[in-house]
Length: 254
Image 1 (cartoon, rainbow, N blue to C red):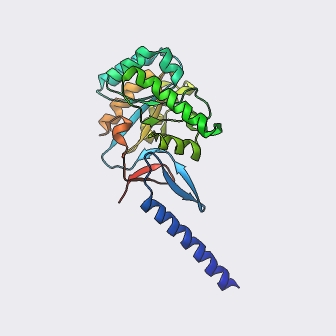
Image 2 (cartoon, one colour):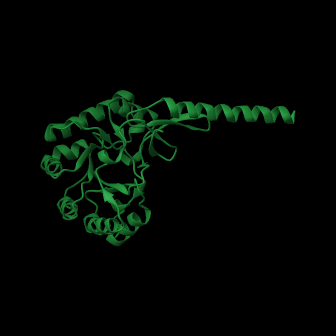
Image 3 (cartoon, rainbow, N blue to C red):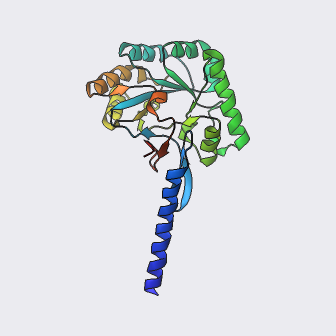
């Protein structure tokens, strides 16, 4: 009996490995990848990118206010850095001049949803409506298509990622969280970010954090001195022929 049980266990493990290998070899999604967790598949957004050239991205979520946004834009400009801003529709509609200003400065822009809701609780139709409407609000100002999406609160499930993928949107998370929304001091924000960054990292910040604008120049200078190059998320990720591992790290297909 022991031998039979051992054989069955070996066959089950081998089968799962074969399924995962077939999946990773044969299915290419536009913005996410199916991976296996305990024999079940999940769709995983892009948290970071597998590359060894020390390219990284700094991103800002825009949902409330603009009081610190000009200072952030100045810091980015002073260091010649192009970032990516993820905008909620009601923010983009309230501050179209900032949408235009961010676009004119050469930064990337993605949608952060229409209403900043927990999208995993929404139906497929509601998710699609959120993404269509919020993307259109940005395009109406910039004249450019939107192909990047960040879920509010980092909250997603297979349905959210699948709908975004089907709409041509790459779902972007992060692997370095500044926690600037918690009103940490500039020094604390700097330490959190600079201690966690690696090649291919995506940094999460917010356009209206109390001390974000103060921390940004220090982060940029420190990481540039370490040999990192900042690029918008749209230039950091792989656009096709990629996989995403269970940790959300995007890799080019072999």
